[in-house]
Length: 153
Image (tube, rainbow, N blue to C red; front, side, top):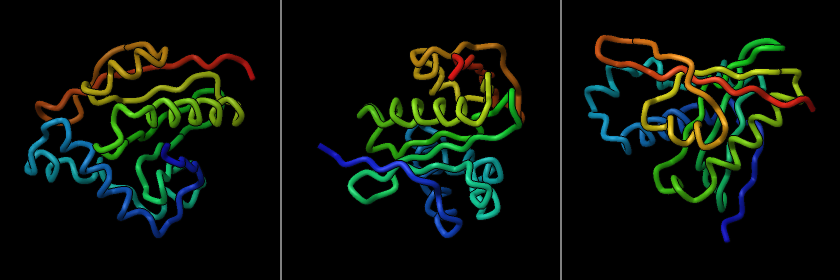
């Protein structure tokens, strides 16, 4: 059984998290050209990590996933949630999701919204989120807009 540790990300891990994001996107068939075109959206900066809202999942000592919360209560945003391809389907996504929603609720959020890759939509629907629309973020690149209503703490 893999040992999972959830902890705040460190600014020095920004490049590792960016690489993990790129691998995660590649898993779904995005080409190197598509990844390069969307580099800004798929980059984690040390500045983003400094605010304490980026949480990483270590699996057996390796960074295997992360999420980032944004916004101000009562309405928050799930800015990012990515898994290394080797852990997709292992239950780590559910662990990260539960931690993210519990952290959001503890911070005073009542809702979370986010733009989801279409490949991740089934996961979020399974976790209880709902699709509330779609948004074109670049020519030919449409993301699904999702929302989760958080039960009171």
